[in-house]
Image 1 (spheres, rainbow, N blue to C red):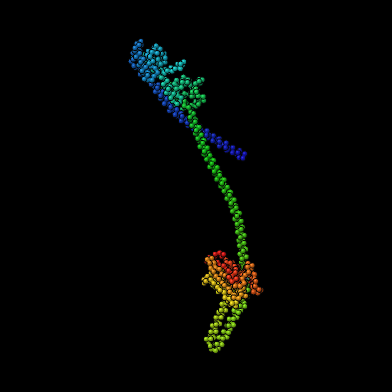
Image 2 (cartoon, rainbow, N blue to C red):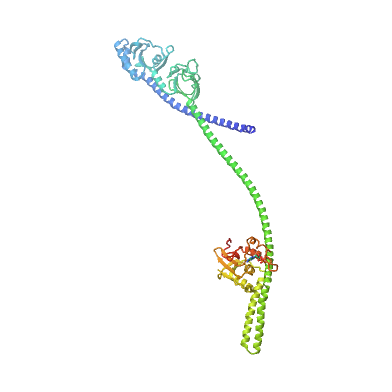
Length: 597
Ligand code: ADP
């Protein structure tokens, strides 16, 4: 963990440093942008104030020259001691003053004495001689004098003009502008606006503290920005100064400082706009961009984390996939091993089966021979009897031929032919039966199988006096089997039934065939002693016999059992209605290889 934390420190510090640098860059750019914007707004504001100021100054500059042409002035100058004339002029001056918004208007004699005034006689007798504005006007020019009373801090802006009598200056008319009005207007501006004269003295300001302050000075108690102000800023330029807006301000703040020259006066108009808002906006921009960057970074982290998660999952998936593949490979190996062993087993089994079949075939053969052996007595009788008959018929025929009795001879010969045909049939059956079958499964007609079996058994049956009763056998009924093998099974069952009923008074063998939708049941019942229950399991075992030596070898049922099983069927022993044995063979229907119950 420690190692991880240490290794993370570098990248994290790098990211933080990069973020700080970017944020710093954003802040500087945003601050510059908003300061420029502020300066632009302030520029518009200062232009407005300049227009305003120029209009104000222009108005008062023009007034004296207009007044000077009024004849009342010259009349008053001509009769300086005429009280009535003076009174009238006083009223006239007062009305002018009132209507122009000036502070005061008055008439000076060439010696500088106040001859009439808008404020009545209060100034009467006062001598304004040698004041700059009187002096200028006496020179025949427009005179201007910004009067400052350092003691009372009162200011008056006097505009003067000569009153001409012909080409002579007869007197001077003076209009004193109302500085307070202008300053009231300056005060309306949200920014600090003030005017300095050519010496850098604040001559007009809405701020009383600022008035008559020398910019560049740092007099205690004065508003500080003034101390750092420069006046050589051209239009479009601004400087940043720090200071308090007024005395009540505790903290210094920053201002954007703009300067514009005021035409003709040699004055400079200053504007100080608090820049706090620009900084605040820059901070907001930084905060917002920081927020946005954080959101983007978080989103990036999330996406990254999700990507990592997906990647991990993918890796895990791949790992699992590989594991699965390995498992599958192992299973496949197991399976193929199992398959191989299965194939081996199948091979072994089929070999064993082939061997078994061989053995079984051998057994069948042995069984057949046994049956033939058993049948030999009956067979010899079967053959001897017709042979004896044939011999007699032949002798008869010879005699009849000698006697010329052809018809009788023919009759005997025909009997011989019938007998030989019967013998030929028996012989064919015997050879069929004795032959080793190589038959497969086919649709076997049950009637044929019974015909053959009963044909071969005919001599034995006749001898025993038994005529099997066959029920339910319809023509065309077929089963899926091998004809010779099924015939062998039936002959075994019928033979056993004959053996069993040997001592029965009225021996009877019933053969019943029943069909259902899935197969065929062949039942061979007799009225013999039956098979005791305890022996029912054993009678299908090879070489199990209860018969005396020479009569039975105990293979018949064992072979029959295997043959029927090969057919996909089964053979069972039970009790017949007459209390004897009942053997039931179930074979599949030929239509389908339907399971036999
Ligand atoms: P084998 O006839 O040579 O004895 P099988 O395998 O044909 O051999 O018969 C085995 C035994 O089953 C017989 O010995 C006999 O005890 C009994 N068995 C067969 N069929 C019958 C039957 N129909 N009734 C009574 N017992 C029978």
